[in-house]
Length: 372
Image 1 (tube, rainbow, N blue to C red):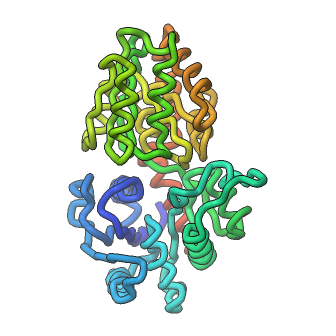
Image 2: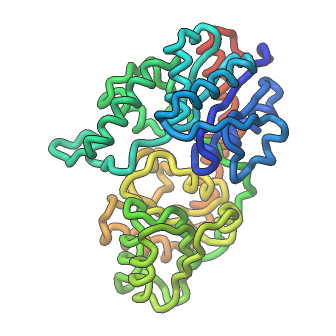
Image 3: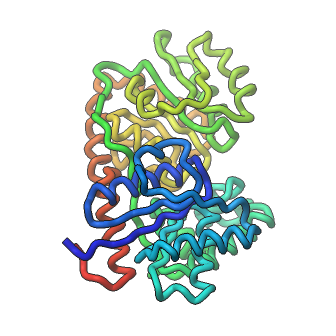
């Protein structure tokens, strides 16, 4: 075992994917016995109990709150970490301030780049010629992202597609990037024991999540069996439109709103569908895989890499393709086989211990210390 590290995680949010990833990673590192960990930020809405006493409340209200950024940096340095790891966009700015202040030599500075702003389209992200680009404001945000990624020691990208975007479009040197998958909580696989009939969607009800496309695909004649159902977990501005579209499916769609028990809901259903027009490495896909559930999704970001040969993929926004993938899912006589394959893939890539080990190796590389 190598020298025990002191790792500080910085958050400026109390909920969302970056927070859940940071909490799980912190717990896994603590369990490894190879690191002392403290999470700096608001109290997480989910999973705070996993941190025990390894949390210090720090608030950074906005990107322009200079004083709050200074207070956060002071709190971090007072703990004397070996590594500071920022886990959301605003905390990345704060961590980059450690470099600007000339404190980089005192500790390693790492960030995880979880995703681009919402109005970045998949085609522009992939560099398709003449694809419509994002707004001027978003371009400014991306320019700032590039500055931060060049300042810190390493930027972790959960999806390889994001690494390609940062290196090719934002001109971040490839040597400053490291691909490490997100981790999800350990789960006992529960593959479907018969044909898929209970389908679940999990996500914000916003246009880019594609719930309208999903409902249109399910309404194509011959796709959704009479005894099949869809549970929609989440809420948002697209809910009213989605409820109207769901009326064509004769009461077979339930809208459950926001739920804190997503892992339990995944285990209670047969398969996940995520028809987004833009994703990177969505946690819900990894959670469904760990639970042994088949997944129908769109070929966006790193989703295809997550699912491998067991994935059923459609082009984003393509109703006909999505309908065909869903029909094949419902007709599969042994979806449990796919579920078991995905569960094994999740154990190899997304298990907390695997994720913790890869982060420890990165931290030691950044610090120039031998591995454990």
